Amino acid sequence: MEHASGQQHPIGLYLKVWGLLFVLSTLSYLVDYFHLQGFLRWFLIVAFMLLKAGLIVSVFMHLRWERLALVYAILIPPLCLLVLVGLMQAEANYTFSTRGVFFGDESAATAHVKPK
Amino acid sequence: MAQRNSSPPESPLTPAAGWQGVVVDWSGDREAFKVPWGKAMMWVFLLSDTFIFGCFLTGYMTVRMSTTVPWPNPSEVFALTIGGTAVPLILIAIMTFILISSSGTMAMAVNFAYRRDRAKCAALMLATALLGACFVGLQAFEWTHLIVEEGVRPWSNPLGAPQFGSTFFMITGFHGLHVSAGVIYLAIVALKVLGGRYEKSGNYQIVEIAGLYWHFVDLVWVFIFAFFYLW
Image (tube, rainbow over all chains, first blue to last red; front, side, top):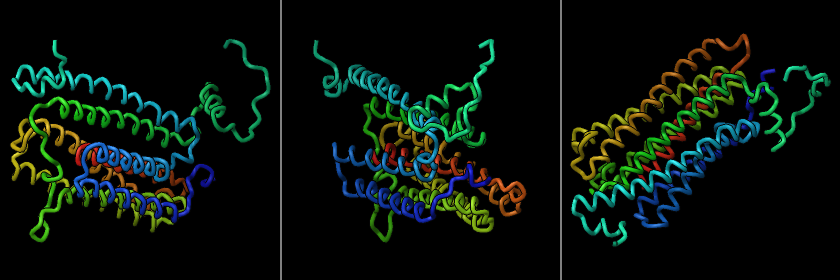
């Protein structure tokens, strides 16, 4: 009975994922160490982050062996946060441009506010 | 709704998989998640925690994007001088490796729990708690460095944008609180496992549930590491 609901997987799998997480962390640290900038930095940081998060959630938290009803209930609601991120991005750009106007930093203001 | 369904109950065969499985599981007016209640509740709690940390990180994004004062470079702020040379961000890298290692030992502890290998399970859980305590210790060191030597406060920051101070203390503080709570939680469960508390029922689910919480703490750190320290 205790095997019916318990998650039983070979230790070797955990060790492999552990090793992969180490490699991915080292790689993301090296992104900073070698001062990569611009799109490459942005892309690599997010890629390594999502890979690490995926490995932890799917293997360590056993989500890839759970039923889809539970998987969807857990993974879909956080996507709402992307809407919040989108709204806040617009809000932050607006705040930045108004600060530029009222605090006198003209170069920052003109970059974000269309000329009349 | 009023009259009872007279058709015979569904045959207790293996439930449908894929999309049909989702519909069948959600639509039956009965238990939706075929996992022990403790595990389902831990997932619900972790989902709510996801929103808390998600909102914190979104708030951090908003203030960082909207400030006109330059943001301090985390790579330099969190550098350590080792053998005379400043290694960028090394303190955070060490903390990351410690937390990942603790996740590895926790995953193996769950494995040994289901094999009912009490001694190994408890030893691995205590190792996890110890690594977690190391993480909190390093975080205390990091905070002390920032508060005492750099003069960073939640409301001001001599290195640049004051929002750096407020978001740093709020996000890492809340995460550190989760790690500290996890250390206590794991230590209690480990001692109970060692004492044979779950031997009679043979139900070692609690180790997996405690593990879920611990992996989540590691998961949150992955996002903090990427967005706060590397960005």
